[in-house]
Length: 193
Image (cartoon, rainbow, N blue to C red; front, side):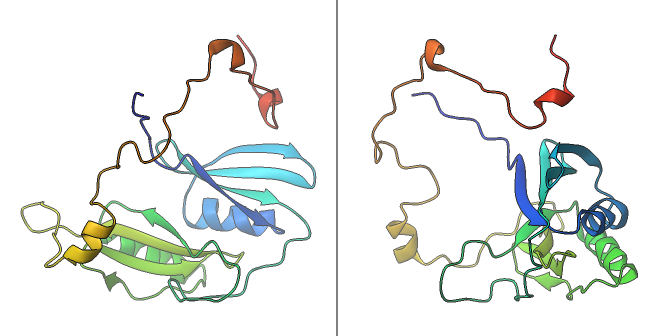
């Protein structure tokens, strides 16, 4: 089977009870374009452009409670699936600009943290969603930093970086006559040619 070509995360989908505060934070404070609002009252979805072909979105649901603050990467017990979203920025200067924006908007901002492979700044949006703003760490000559040591036992256990072929059954292709597309929320906003 031919390899699928991924293009990054198209969008994430979170929930908010306060769309106005959410728009005010993501669009007006951080400067991300509001590119689409779709859906019906009580179930609208707002999309903010993070980068080329990449958005963060929010469903507007009146009954959603703001999540309590939890430090990024802090272990928890019980059912849990989401820790934080990391948004890439161009360089260290951009991290300082984001820190200034967060300070001006009276949102918490961590110090810039050097993780070796990247620099990170941590904060929260009005819904309590943990956000990391990050840029790759680079050497003076522009080459990426490489780790000083890799645990060879762990690396062998996960079989390295590349996908392992044939560990799953090969899929049957979806035939053209079985490729059914149904209309969804937002379809009514676009004219068909």
